Length: 147
Image (cartoon, rainbow, N blue to C red; front, top):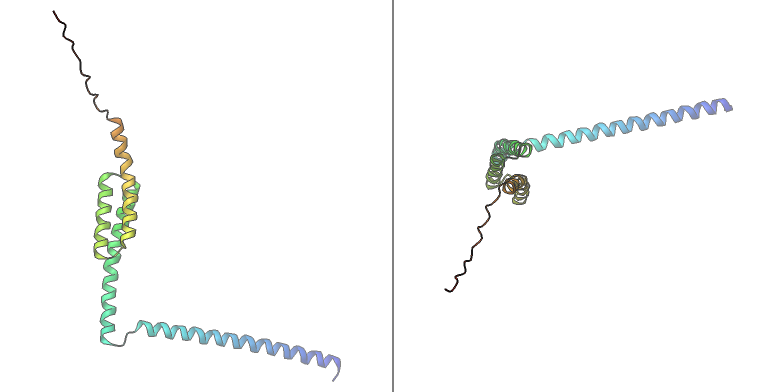
């Protein structure tokens, strides 16, 4: 073979190898994504009756819990925006109810309640400072003179 023919053959072989690897990697990617899709489909479709029922229950519970969570979040936002006693009271009450049902963990509820109560306290302290307590009257001691 002449030198020019060798270079052409080598370039052709290199192009074939690169194309082969590209085709191979894309085939692996397609196979991998197809396997992931199959796994996801398998996880979404329960087989036994009890699993199907559990899935229905979970959907109902998830919707109910989401409704309560959004209500609590909106009340907390209102309390943070305008920290009046009534707003803080409503938010704390909603947090306690959500904890009772088991939507929030006790530590999270107590942390949020403490933050909310700190917001409500400074206003009460400011009012207490402005109201002056009446001073106690001093006792007047009288001394009797002997006649």
